Length: 228
Image (cartoon, rainbow, N blue to C red; front, side, top):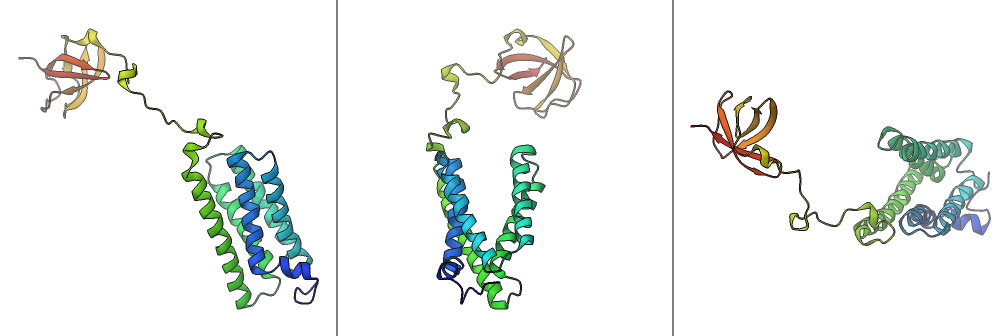
């Protein structure tokens, strides 16, 4: 095992808490940048390189072992399952995220961590996640103006003036009479010639069994009043 205090200068730099936090931030932000902006593989390249330097340096100084890499691999696999196989399932995503974070922490602590090492690792992870959170929030906030992902969001309105309707009008029901199948409070269901129709009264309560008449139709709403 190489002691980072006496080992090569490069390893000492790469395992420094500030540099480690920067590598984690660049690694994850690079992957997010590839998704957000489509960098023709550059985001994946820089992200993978940064994460590779982080975990590679940890392995070389003896902070991370095969157990840490196995944990990282399982976490990435679980995240891949969440994204590509079981989207929206949630459990694999949470498990994968927990394993990846645990691998990062393990790579910072080493085999025999002290209280200071634990606090330093927590500060490094917190700093990295703060940077990632700020960048991710900024990108999500500007997502509606993104040319690459504009198709994911519905930004136009479906106004009735443009010819959009919620449901076809039932002008054929106007003037017809029926019987309330449920209490109208003021909405409910009536029977008109064997057809069940969802209706709304003009404002009053009508008990089930009341005979009503359709007086007008407003898109999907049929307005009724009691028959005198």
